[in-house]
Image (cartoon, rainbow, N blue to C red; front, side, top):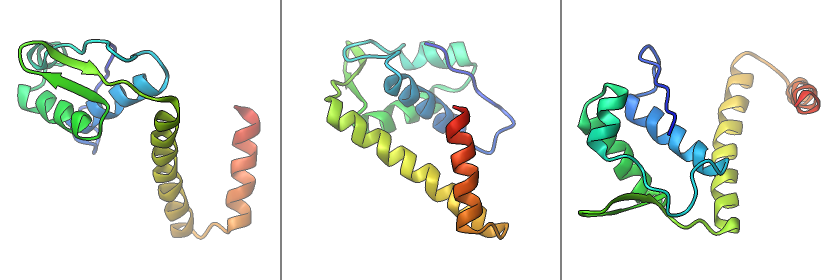
Length: 124
């Protein structure tokens, strides 16, 4: 599992870990039943405290992305395609909300924002 942390980011380390694991689930790099490293092993690999990895894993479990079993470890939960798509849509909506808010802060009109969106959509 490949996780890269940005120590100088305003995003807390546990959040960075959580979001990168979710992204790997969304892209199919992590699939149902895949084992995650132990909290201690991941903390050691990332050079963070076990409390940081524990919080990331707990939030992932609370949100339904992973299942933890005492003595066995933490595994990627089964994701039904429609549920996974719903999670992805929720994440996208959160990002769109941030973009719209930022656009309004700098005085961008809806038309200008849509023009930017069209431009980026065509590039990708």
